[in-house]
Image (tube, rainbow, N blue to C red; front, top):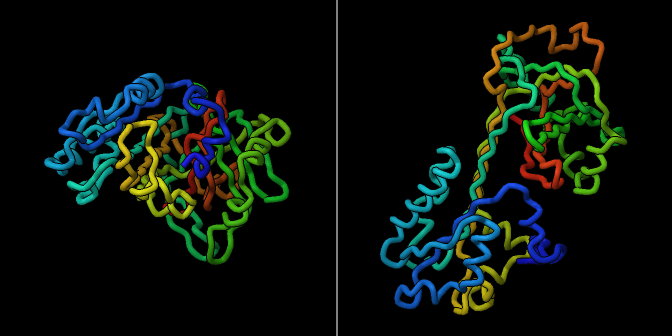
Length: 319
């Protein structure tokens, strides 16, 4: 597990302590050994959960009340995500044989440092590829922003800051292909070192930028068991090989399922300024500075600029 997730490349609890905001988490485990929960979970593990995640494990009886436990977990996730993620664990995902379920739900909604104008009054084409387009509502912003160009990938990069230390970086290739998103080359070239170089001063500089991006909301959920196993995390899902001795002295704990769901909501955050016209979208604006017109697929990163931690990474390829 440590090797696949590359935890072995950092020391101690650096992953958690580098995060300035506390991260909330919740572990649900079946009552074991006559329901004597304190004996099942090590006190050291409980203390670490309190210290680094501001939470602690809770005893849940999967054996007798599996469906009630599932609903309880979903209710907690719904509360933590302001109602955005209401059914993280689907029916049947928890039963009387469940030993442990690792649940991770993330909801992000930031407030722009400089709000966008209200959606433009007309629909504009978003080009899924060079052959197909779908009408979307666009948002407009003209502001001094960091913008750059990745020459070898023919890709614009733009920083949209939120209040605080969080920013969204959008990467927009110049062209799209006949039957694909045009993101393939960019996605194949991205790695952490290159990304850090792209968002640095050698690539980006402040300019007066006219920005047009669609309002969008992305929701995605994953059952990660097969993905993690394909990455090499086999032992954690194998009852005879799993080693969770850091959690419990018992040797019968193993991962049964891993679920992940994320929601990213990108909108104008309630601004009431008027929108533009169709001519704006074709570049005939009279604006002398650069333009960033996201009317075809793009990639975005949401990062904490203090820790350089990537919080979200996604693609918008179709409305």
